[in-house]
Length: 228
Image 1 (tube, rainbow, N blue to C red):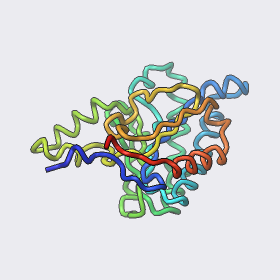
Image 2: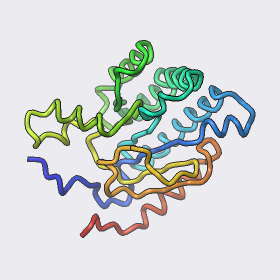
Image 3: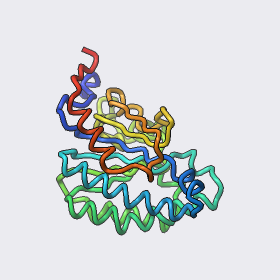
Image 4: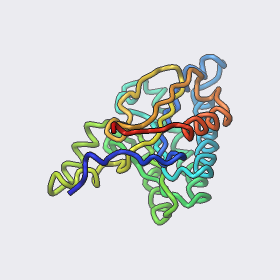
Protein backbone atom coordinates (compact mmCIF):
# COMPACT_ATOMS: atom_id res chain seq x y z
CA UNK A 1 0.00 0.00 0.00
CA UNK A 2 1.23 3.48 -0.78
CA UNK A 3 2.30 5.41 2.29
CA UNK A 4 0.43 8.65 1.73
CA UNK A 5 1.90 10.28 4.83
CA UNK A 6 5.39 9.88 3.36
CA UNK A 7 4.56 11.64 0.08
CA UNK A 8 6.96 14.48 0.66
CA UNK A 9 10.52 15.24 -0.45
CA UNK A 10 13.58 14.15 1.49
CA UNK A 11 15.70 16.62 3.45
CA UNK A 12 18.71 16.68 1.13
CA UNK A 13 20.55 19.97 0.79
CA UNK A 14 20.22 19.93 -2.99
CA UNK A 15 16.58 19.89 -4.15
CA UNK A 16 15.90 16.66 -5.97
CA UNK A 17 12.79 17.95 -7.73
CA UNK A 18 12.43 21.58 -8.78
CA UNK A 19 9.34 23.26 -10.21
CA UNK A 20 9.65 26.25 -12.51
CA UNK A 21 6.83 28.69 -13.31
CA UNK A 22 8.33 31.03 -15.95
CA UNK A 23 5.74 33.79 -15.76
CA UNK A 24 5.76 37.14 -17.50
CA UNK A 25 6.29 36.43 -21.19
CA UNK A 26 3.46 38.63 -22.42
CA UNK A 27 4.44 41.53 -20.18
CA UNK A 28 8.08 41.25 -21.25
CA UNK A 29 7.03 41.45 -24.91
CA UNK A 30 4.94 44.55 -24.20
CA UNK A 31 7.71 46.18 -22.15
CA UNK A 32 10.25 45.64 -24.94
CA UNK A 33 7.91 46.41 -27.83
CA UNK A 34 8.54 43.02 -29.38
CA UNK A 35 6.46 40.04 -30.47
CA UNK A 36 5.22 37.23 -28.28
CA UNK A 37 7.22 34.83 -30.44
CA UNK A 38 10.42 36.70 -29.64
CA UNK A 39 9.61 36.75 -25.94
CA UNK A 40 8.80 33.04 -25.87
CA UNK A 41 11.95 32.29 -27.85
CA UNK A 42 14.02 34.06 -25.19
CA UNK A 43 12.15 32.11 -22.51
CA UNK A 44 12.82 28.71 -24.05
CA UNK A 45 16.52 29.42 -24.49
CA UNK A 46 16.86 30.62 -20.89
CA UNK A 47 14.83 27.67 -19.58
CA UNK A 48 17.29 25.29 -21.23
CA UNK A 49 20.18 27.17 -19.59
CA UNK A 50 18.52 27.08 -16.16
CA UNK A 51 17.66 23.38 -16.43
CA UNK A 52 21.21 22.54 -17.49
CA UNK A 53 22.54 24.39 -14.45
CA UNK A 54 20.09 22.63 -12.11
CA UNK A 55 20.96 19.18 -13.39
CA UNK A 56 24.66 19.99 -13.02
CA UNK A 57 23.99 20.99 -9.39
CA UNK A 58 22.49 17.58 -8.62
CA UNK A 59 18.79 18.13 -9.27
CA UNK A 60 17.36 15.01 -10.90
CA UNK A 61 13.83 16.11 -11.82
CA UNK A 62 12.44 19.40 -13.11
CA UNK A 63 8.77 20.20 -13.69
CA UNK A 64 8.09 23.20 -15.92
CA UNK A 65 4.66 24.85 -15.92
CA UNK A 66 4.34 25.89 -19.55
CA UNK A 67 0.56 26.29 -19.65
CA UNK A 68 -2.62 25.54 -17.75
CA UNK A 69 -6.00 24.58 -19.17
CA UNK A 70 -7.07 28.19 -18.57
CA UNK A 71 -4.25 29.50 -20.78
CA UNK A 72 -5.95 27.93 -23.77
CA UNK A 73 -8.84 30.37 -23.33
CA UNK A 74 -6.62 33.27 -24.38
CA UNK A 75 -6.80 34.96 -27.75
CA UNK A 76 -5.99 32.59 -30.59
CA UNK A 77 -3.02 34.69 -31.70
CA UNK A 78 -1.45 34.26 -28.24
CA UNK A 79 -2.13 30.52 -28.25
CA UNK A 80 -0.62 30.20 -31.72
CA UNK A 81 2.53 32.06 -30.64
CA UNK A 82 2.98 29.77 -27.65
CA UNK A 83 2.34 26.65 -29.70
CA UNK A 84 4.73 27.66 -32.47
CA UNK A 85 7.66 28.43 -30.20
CA UNK A 86 7.21 25.53 -27.81
CA UNK A 87 6.80 23.04 -30.67
CA UNK A 88 10.18 24.17 -32.01
CA UNK A 89 11.66 23.80 -28.51
CA UNK A 90 10.54 20.18 -28.25
CA UNK A 91 12.71 19.21 -31.19
CA UNK A 92 15.57 21.58 -30.42
CA UNK A 93 16.36 23.02 -26.96
CA UNK A 94 14.45 20.45 -24.90
CA UNK A 95 15.65 17.48 -26.93
CA UNK A 96 19.25 18.71 -26.90
CA UNK A 97 19.10 19.25 -23.14
CA UNK A 98 17.58 15.82 -22.53
CA UNK A 99 20.17 14.10 -24.70
CA UNK A 100 23.10 15.93 -23.13
CA UNK A 101 21.98 15.18 -19.56
CA UNK A 102 20.48 11.75 -20.37
CA UNK A 103 17.12 12.65 -18.82
CA UNK A 104 13.72 11.63 -20.13
CA UNK A 105 11.00 14.07 -21.13
CA UNK A 106 7.50 13.45 -19.75
CA UNK A 107 4.30 15.19 -20.82
CA UNK A 108 1.89 16.09 -18.01
CA UNK A 109 -1.43 17.50 -19.15
CA UNK A 110 -4.52 17.14 -21.29
CA UNK A 111 -3.47 15.73 -24.65
CA UNK A 112 -6.98 15.95 -26.09
CA UNK A 113 -7.08 19.74 -26.48
CA UNK A 114 -3.71 20.03 -28.24
CA UNK A 115 -3.33 20.34 -32.03
CA UNK A 116 -2.28 17.14 -33.77
CA UNK A 117 1.14 18.30 -35.00
CA UNK A 118 1.91 19.84 -31.62
CA UNK A 119 1.06 16.60 -29.84
CA UNK A 120 3.18 14.60 -32.28
CA UNK A 121 6.15 16.85 -31.50
CA UNK A 122 5.73 16.21 -27.77
CA UNK A 123 5.34 12.47 -28.24
CA UNK A 124 8.41 12.37 -30.48
CA UNK A 125 10.68 13.80 -27.79
CA UNK A 126 9.07 11.52 -25.19
CA UNK A 127 9.89 8.47 -27.31
CA UNK A 128 13.45 9.61 -28.12
CA UNK A 129 14.28 10.16 -24.45
CA UNK A 130 12.27 7.36 -22.84
CA UNK A 131 15.34 5.21 -22.21
CA UNK A 132 17.35 7.86 -20.36
CA UNK A 133 17.83 7.13 -16.65
CA UNK A 134 19.56 10.18 -15.15
CA UNK A 135 16.40 12.10 -14.36
CA UNK A 136 13.34 13.72 -15.89
CA UNK A 137 11.89 16.90 -17.32
CA UNK A 138 8.13 17.08 -16.80
CA UNK A 139 6.41 19.42 -19.26
CA UNK A 140 3.16 20.62 -17.71
CA UNK A 141 1.10 21.74 -20.70
CA UNK A 142 -2.67 22.18 -20.68
CA UNK A 143 -2.31 21.03 -17.08
CA UNK A 144 -5.08 20.82 -14.51
CA UNK A 145 -4.71 19.00 -11.18
CA UNK A 146 -8.28 17.70 -11.13
CA UNK A 147 -7.72 16.07 -14.51
CA UNK A 148 -4.49 14.58 -13.21
CA UNK A 149 -6.41 12.99 -10.34
CA UNK A 150 -9.18 11.75 -12.62
CA UNK A 151 -6.55 10.18 -14.85
CA UNK A 152 -4.77 8.56 -11.91
CA UNK A 153 -7.99 7.11 -10.50
CA UNK A 154 -9.07 5.78 -13.90
CA UNK A 155 -5.76 3.93 -14.31
CA UNK A 156 -5.71 2.52 -10.77
CA UNK A 157 -7.31 -0.81 -9.97
CA UNK A 158 -7.29 0.12 -6.29
CA UNK A 159 -6.91 3.37 -4.36
CA UNK A 160 -3.55 2.10 -3.16
CA UNK A 161 -1.97 2.80 -6.57
CA UNK A 162 -3.07 6.40 -7.13
CA UNK A 163 0.35 7.97 -6.56
CA UNK A 164 1.97 5.62 -9.07
CA UNK A 165 -0.42 6.82 -11.77
CA UNK A 166 -0.10 10.55 -11.32
CA UNK A 167 1.32 12.42 -14.31
CA UNK A 168 4.08 13.69 -12.01
CA UNK A 169 4.88 10.97 -9.52
CA UNK A 170 7.33 12.58 -7.11
CA UNK A 171 6.91 15.45 -4.62
CA UNK A 172 8.60 18.78 -5.21
CA UNK A 173 11.39 20.14 -3.03
CA UNK A 174 11.37 23.66 -4.43
CA UNK A 175 9.21 25.87 -6.68
CA UNK A 176 10.41 29.08 -8.30
CA UNK A 177 7.93 31.48 -9.87
CA UNK A 178 8.79 34.71 -11.65
CA UNK A 179 6.56 37.65 -12.52
CA UNK A 180 5.47 38.99 -9.16
CA UNK A 181 2.47 36.72 -8.49
CA UNK A 182 2.63 34.83 -5.19
CA UNK A 183 0.38 31.93 -6.11
CA UNK A 184 0.81 28.53 -7.73
CA UNK A 185 -2.04 28.81 -10.26
CA UNK A 186 -2.93 25.12 -9.93
CA UNK A 187 0.66 23.97 -10.45
CA UNK A 188 1.02 20.43 -9.08
CA UNK A 189 -0.75 21.10 -5.76
CA UNK A 190 -0.56 17.50 -4.56
CA UNK A 191 3.17 17.35 -5.27
CA UNK A 192 3.77 20.80 -3.73
CA UNK A 193 2.61 20.10 -0.18
CA UNK A 194 6.07 20.48 1.38
CA UNK A 195 7.82 22.44 -1.36
CA UNK A 196 9.68 25.63 -0.54
CA UNK A 197 8.24 28.50 -2.55
CA UNK A 198 10.24 31.34 -4.07
CA UNK A 199 8.28 34.14 -5.73
CA UNK A 200 10.39 36.58 -7.72
CA UNK A 201 9.17 40.03 -8.74
CA UNK A 202 11.18 40.04 -11.97
CA UNK A 203 9.73 38.73 -15.21
CA UNK A 204 11.31 35.44 -16.22
CA UNK A 205 13.17 36.90 -19.19
CA UNK A 206 14.74 39.53 -16.93
CA UNK A 207 16.28 36.99 -14.55
CA UNK A 208 19.87 35.75 -14.67
CA UNK A 209 21.52 32.48 -13.79
CA UNK A 210 22.82 34.12 -10.62
CA UNK A 211 19.25 34.55 -9.36
CA UNK A 212 18.82 30.78 -9.47
CA UNK A 213 22.23 30.14 -7.94
CA UNK A 214 21.23 32.32 -4.99
CA UNK A 215 18.02 30.36 -4.47
CA UNK A 216 19.78 26.99 -4.60
CA UNK A 217 22.30 28.26 -2.04
CA UNK A 218 19.55 29.56 0.25
CA UNK A 219 17.69 26.27 -0.05
CA UNK A 220 20.83 24.37 0.95
CA UNK A 221 20.89 26.29 4.24
CA UNK A 222 17.34 25.38 5.28
CA UNK A 223 16.42 22.98 8.07
CA UNK A 224 13.19 21.34 6.96
CA UNK A 225 10.86 19.39 9.28
CA UNK A 226 7.96 18.24 7.05
CA UNK A 227 5.45 18.81 9.83
CA UNK A 228 7.31 16.87 12.53
